[in-house]
Length: 196
Image (cartoon, rainbow, N blue to C red):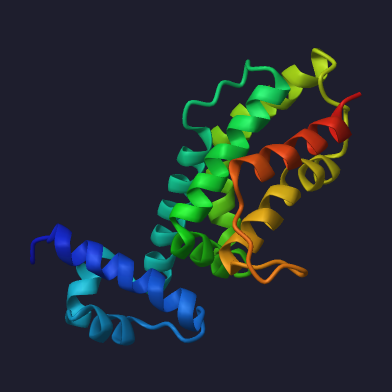
């Protein structure tokens, strides 16, 4: 049995994510990956059972990394304003620092792999965020809303700012970069909208 090589495994992961971002899942295969990563197809099978296993492991790994960044130094007992601010900062940092990983998750999101990956993420992340929201409602810092409405108001403005930042422009400005000031100005409007 061949031994595992961390450098080869890392190269395979990185090249697979890059290929899926560029060509989508339909254009992705083990033989193409092996050639791009400079390894034999047999080497890939040391680390993964098959193409599906590879995609699932990559998706789970990136999703858990994203959730870990989101929860870094986050306290579900914090006030709603402080907790949401921390979430925005953490998420913005991750999305801007790791655009390839974010684009990869977006590719996976619209596939049959995502449901299982999402179920794995819900356990810890859902519990922590659920506690945070419940606490905020009890303290009358947050309106009780259907999840989808809450999510759309609480996070969609941040993701739109990140999108403009990543594109380097908005619909009316040929140059745009999200600053802390712009992000906090937007957050204040979101907090105002979510107050009871």
